[in-house]
Image (cartoon, rainbow, N blue to C red):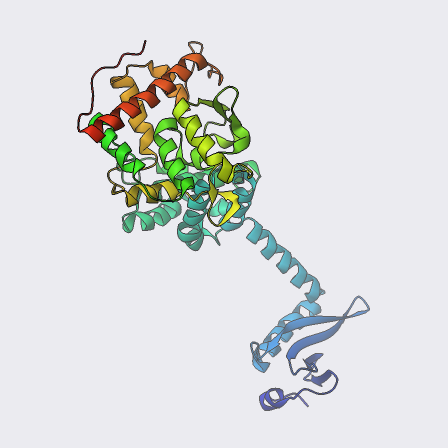
Length: 409
């Protein structure tokens, strides 16, 4: 007798698993815990096989019979329904491996580890929040330019124009990765040039007026935070390197004998090694901090654990504490401060300044200068810069900041 829906529903667990037969090889398997599974027992090429048809109650008796009939129809055509199931699973797996999200995650894991933490986190947010929810399940080779544009317009619609441009750039990198790995033939992001709203030009807030710089330095001296953050804050204008490079400074990178900080290529944005000559003032700050953190790896370790560097918000929060808003001054702004004053007030050579900022500076033959280029001159410049900052600080304390032309000798 075929099963009824009531019999299926009321079937209880027993000490051992048991079967309730329906018809044509279809049966309900009830395990010792009461879970119920639909199965189809059949023979193909002389061998007895079993095909899983689902779990009750997700699959009802009626649905199980429909799946059973479909399998029997295949069997009548000389097709093994079990092999069909295997092929379907493989096809789904391959499709998933070639979806935008699958390729994106593979790209991220392959190419992002050597990027900065902030860049990885920003890119990850764009993928998880803006791209995967819209394009993630789509086969990457099938995504068209209008489809990608629609996803980017959703980002634009909430006013995040810069993020929309970043998302376009990130998606383009994923498409190009798919091309070289044989899973796509073209990059549709290349068709979207000019399709998005223009980015608003934004620059890191910076103080470049010498009088205001003097007042800022006085405020920095008054900061009452930990010695670690105090030192990172005081070194920021003296060294004017990228905030991430300063907070990730390691004691092993300090050459005390030569009086310089040597950064390896893997830490630098341009992926070239870099040397920062240390002024007397910078060395004194580091020597005062060494008894506190010198036994560890990082010059500025995190308060949450010496195994990692100071948070990227450490110096930024210190600036807020001494009264400077994000619109007035940022940690990155110390670079613009130095760039402007070294050029316009102290009149140092622009190529020296650019090299010290670790920008891409090339020689007359178009080759990147090596890290020791103009090192003696740059060392003099860094010392002159530190002395000038002392003058500005002292002038601000006395209410008489000197802002004249200080041509280097």
